[in-house]
Amino acid sequence: MNVTQARIRLNGPIDLLTTIPHLLGFHPDHSLVVVGLIGGELQCTFRADLPGSADHLEHLPDLTAQLSRNECDACVVIAYGEADLAEAAVERVAARLHAAGIEPLDRLRVEAGRWFSLTCDKPCCPPEGAPIPETSAASCEVAVAGGYAAADRSAIAAQLAPAAPGRRALVAKAIAETLAAEADLDWAAQRSIDLHSIDHWMGVNALPGPADIAAVGLALGDLDIRDYALRRINSGGFEGNRIDLWIWVARHLEEDLVAPAATVAGFAAYRFGNGVLALEAFELALRSSPHYRLAQMLMAALQAGIPPGALSRIGCGDREEAEVGE
Image (cartoon, rainbow, N blue to C red; front, side, top):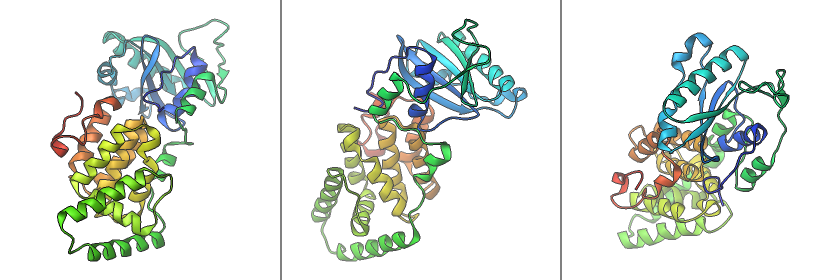
């Protein structure tokens, strides 16, 4: 089971507000969050930074296309921040979505651990706000499905920080030794070794040491082997997609080798529904190799709100020419 497969029904603001950090992967702040719904069930979640003030709402991204692409018929709009800016942002976004036929069922604001309804004045929604509990039935469902909430966005980026210099040096040495040892192998023998390496490490729960990091990292540099890994990710659930493995490998590789591993890490995160981690991984890939096409394509798909399930053809057919979607 994973977040993209879990069917979560929300039974009120508490369910929603305790679930959002698990869906985003971190606790939002100074943010606009739009939760898209289909028939009352959670379909997608998108977040954007709030502008600096209510006088600069023109800088607020329009998320209408993303919700439309996910076929949402309703939504909830939440802003995290001080009243004037947050309320103005919520009203602007809600009006856009209503005009597009996506009905805002609720408008909420969150500040300092309390939530405020912008549509309800009944006792259930006091004007002074109400505290947000740590958990709810819905947030527990998402946690069971694999959702995890880091403290903030920077904690997500830290997951991809380079490994300690000493460990990276050991991997660099192992890469040089591996290249020397495999210099005389023919294509079939090399392919067999690379496929075995991917299969082995996707089938265990351990993380590789320097020699095996070198083997996996070099293997992913072959587009056929990289695409084989993508197909393996597509064919299995969260337990088999080994996001931890791909991140681990990417963290230990030097800049000239990191793009394939970081892209595979981002793909695995995207397929699982962790868009923020996926974005960080694609950005890492593109910092090291700005023209790496698969990372460019997947980042564009993520930013456009393409559902994770539409990635099922990635890794099939003509390598990076495969289309996103059916």
